Length: 70
View 1 (tube, rainbow, N blue to C red):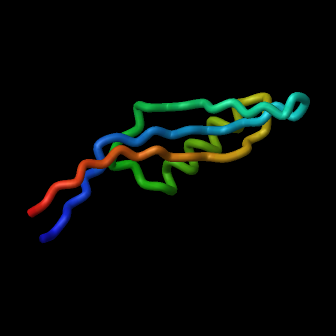
View 2: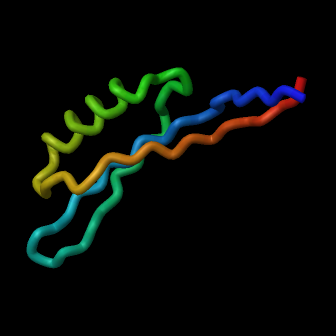
């Protein structure tokens, strides 16, 4: 039995940290093309982080996939 994985949605999350309080803030972007490549999402995350007042802590991608069998 072969299993196929189809990416349905990507969500880009840019995490910034307030250096004074130590609290993290997640900036979430759900309108990301499901076919977007990892390098492109990383570049977008860095571009978004450069516009923030707090420094970048991390870039995450949440992926929703459907599994089907052949």
